[in-house]
Image (cartoon, rainbow, N blue to C red; front, side, top):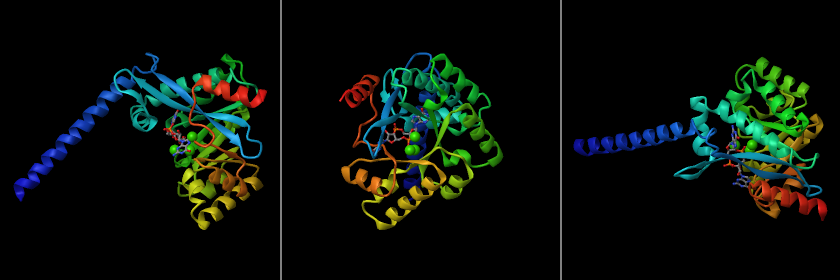
Length: 275
Ligand code: C2E
Ligand code: CA
Ligand code: CA
Ligand code: CA
């Protein structure tokens, strides 16, 4: 039995070592991803549940790795956050998002995901303002999406950053709403323009009356606070109809479109606007 246990331990140890080596290799490659032009953005439409029009696109980061093919954010954002590479990568995302939105009609906006490290970076607002002016776009065409976990810690500092963003005209969204611990209190304490209701609630509404009660309450509270709501993970017509009936303003999900290339975004906008 003892031998068997030692064997298992050795295997675990070996696979841990492999996982660690793989992560190290990936993080070394990630160091050069920006300069080598391996990163790109995909854009997923956020659609009015009333008119069906695209009001904005969420920019979603992808990494075209030279030997592994496309790497998804779940597999490299955590590495970028741990190593601090998220700061230069995040600056690239912001510049690229500003460049992309400048190609679209003026009433179409873009949403950018932000990690906690970026949110607390003192040079954040200046670098966004620079990127916006470089591409000749109004800061109010940018929405920064942050999650509740980003707000944990120093309330005063977070409030100051949100206020400074607002004064610059940059909009903010609370992402994955409902998955954290203090959602409702964050909603009343921090001045967000938008909340994005996590897909677990949107999809759960089709199966459970309790989820419906929660989504309806969130949308009612948001409306009273003057905050827009986006239903995430809208995959079916049922999800869309229910989200709309429960009071969500916008929807995002595979029903409308998967994350798109710039060419497909332009085609979608042309189709929508030219009939
Ligand atoms: P997120 O911000 O919650 O983004 C939405 C994710 O849900 C995206 O995954 C999107 O492809 C996926 N999705 C969209 N519609 C549906 C649907 O109908 N059903 C389902 N099941 N999924 C849907 P993706 O692109 O893999 O991104 C994963 C996460 O990585 C994002 O979650 C965000 O937290 C992070 N991320 C992506 N881009 C960036 C970035 O530029 N910077 C930072 N810091 N994080 C990013
Ligand atoms: Ca997001
Ligand atoms: Ca989300
Ligand atoms: Ca998420």
